[in-house]
Image 1 (tube, one colour):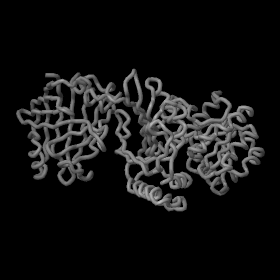
Image 2 (cartoon, rainbow, N blue to C red):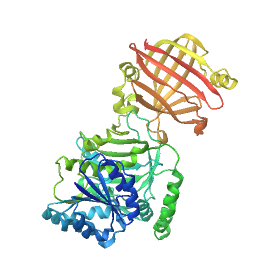
Image 3 (cartoon, rainbow, N blue to C red):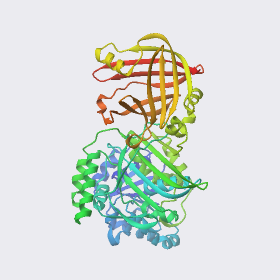
Image 4 (cartoon, helix red, strand yellow):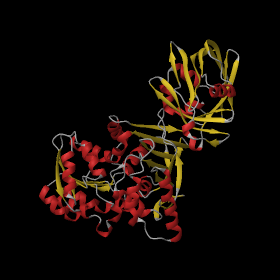
Length: 551
């Protein structure tokens, strides 16, 4: 099989070539205007797929198809928003040569207009699929899964790349080009316009049982989904899609520029694309993690319901996700599963199971969440991961009733002056090799109070579900101090991972945040706990571990 990749040494084309490196008997023509870059890419390539560099301008595609005779053309060049009146030159060349075509187009108008070639593609017996990337291929796959159990009426989504993922110059040109410009979408049941990068929301991407991303600032982007999803789901009244690049300070600068352009009718900022590209690709700090979410609201069994899908990608795996849709189609082609002839968007090109098969070999995790406001606190936070907890943990956390558990614990205390003062303020117990423990769980409005009694020494805290920037986090309050913790399930343990903290309602610096390894598990049929609390400049404050059983 021979595949011609326009922009084959670029961000998306290069990653596609890497994803196909293990495919035997495949030839990849790495094409672009810079032959030197194509040659360097091929020289550094590692895999059993064969790669061949070629100089090719998209204006010369027809001649290249006649010379190279590929089985499939992948357009990974762009920006598709800038192709103008002659934007479909490559598509037309593929139809004339009867060669299948896929592209990474993120321009909403470009992808929306691909249907005009449907009859010609069918006559040629080929498929023309546009926008074969996360937006809208993955979005469409997720929404079709949701539509099995609900009548989708409103959709909101976003993608948050890792700060270390890097961004291509053509992508930056596209984003900066529509910043402050009208963006077509559906709002309140009508075709309408938003303002690119001038509308923002905050959201926490939280796969059940996994460490969530930090609460992300997303801004409206012009992606094909905004026009394609309402066409696929005619009952849809609202759709909004955003991106959450970090660091947030640069993101907010783009927000201000977008609002200024819209307010004062300024020209496009596209001439400054290289500046933004250079700055964004140099300011890389924070967690090397990325994510995506799709939030749907609609009717389920006659009632309004809310369902969300979350994706987390660790390390270097996230940047490959936009190229995985085409990877999936290529692998399905080799297995004899060929898309139907015709020209259309990729909104229904793949099933979620196609993606899951590719994610399984990488550090990419996904999961659905449904809102259950009447469920016990930990079930609300963990979602489907709650059912993977050991039975004793489910028993302790699976009730909203008042209850009491008892057992024994070992307590260690920090010996420094500041550690003793901190422990005394909270009321932590004194050091002991073995001390009887009783924990009373009392429901309160908005949460649950835990009153711990270590041999007569009592201290209490209030646990509740976080809101706003603490969404999907467990917030535990000790007097004026509040700690927002992620609940992570791993190897039969429930880990409590501090993420944010505040004093008297004011956010505190993360580098001063008390922390330490803390987890719950089950052993010999009993609930086991192991808690350590230490702080910078102070050291160990208290650590206690032991077991509990229902009283």
